[in-house]
Amino acid sequence: MTRIAARFGAAGTWGFQTKLGSVVTRDRAAADELVTLTARIAAILEARELLRPRTAGIHNWLTFKGESWPNETYATIALRDAASIVPEVTAVLDARERARKFRAFGQLLVRGDGTALDVLGQSHAYRDLLVLEAYTLDCHHVELSTSSDIWMTQSFRAEPQPEIAARNAPRLREAFEAIESELHLEFYDLGVTHFATTRLYELVPHDSAVDERYLEPDEPSHR
Image (cartoon, rainbow, N blue to C red; front, top):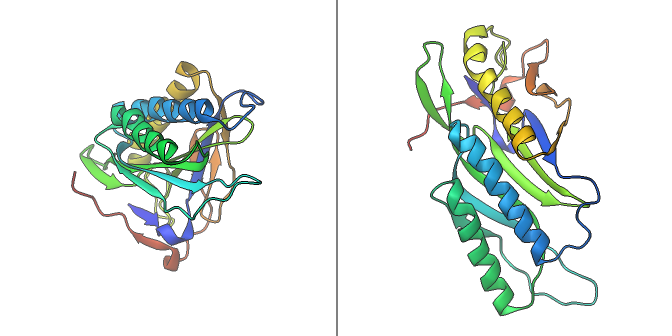
């Protein structure tokens, strides 16, 4: 199992969104909706051991015309699990709002570890198996990215690994189908990257191997 080094971006990204035009203003109510949606998606992934949330990062606080805001550092919040996302993130938003009136944020980034199955079906925990990013435009978006090749029938080195894909890819598909149906969200994939192609719920390898300079070993993490 190999992965794309973090500095080079994700191998593939899938997204879910609410109905276009469902968000009219970037107010606190919209922010709370996004946090709740993030937690519900994280819970579906956690139940399937694809993402056990460990941190939430609030990024890119937005500046509005006519208002002068001092620079603010990103907020990194420790999490116990998916159920802790709403209370922990809400506490940070409440504290910021008490200090100065509500200010919207750009992205909510949830990271943790997930379980991959090897050729024998043995479980191994890997950091950032999936990374969750949530943001709001004219609707809420939640995107799930991976840098791992465990979902593909061949590795990033173009080595066949059908057994690994057969154990892991169906878990990803089942989770995405559950998110789409249970939460009534619209699914989309972001298509081709330099490393692979997202095609519906799948990550499809390119024909040739990925250059070694983009790769790093996908070492198991410790929970």
